[in-house]
Image (cartoon, rainbow, N blue to C red):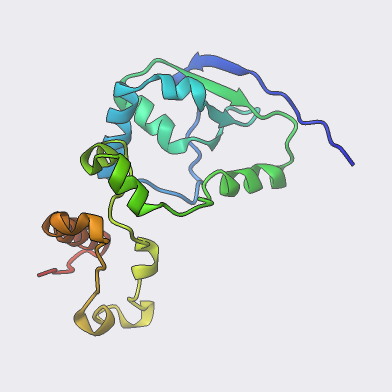
Length: 184
């Protein structure tokens, strides 16, 4: 059984006509937004290669963070693909699937072929982590400490010379995510 793949065209429209999706379950920290904004300023061609996806009402389905970064960068026109003909269920499905990462990084290859500062500038967290899984604070016990007051950070061999920077990054993240959390 072969299905025809719908062909969508990229259009350039006024950024003010595109609506942020307030129901997007993904968010971006201020630091990541600043990096993405700078990335767009440095390499604006990426927007044309990977346009923002919107529904017929110009609500973002894919690219909420890119739209925010474009606004921050002062861009007046953005490339969009209008995904017409999708049901509400398909729009919701797209919203999630567009934000799911399907792979893991080969840290050895990255260490051999890339400069880690440049990767950071491009928006890649060079600390292998899964921050969302650090949420050990239970709602009913707000003051409960994180895993016996300790979090183990494993630093990949190629990054050992950056362990102090990595620790600072972990401290910054935890302090931002958990207000009042003191990290030593």
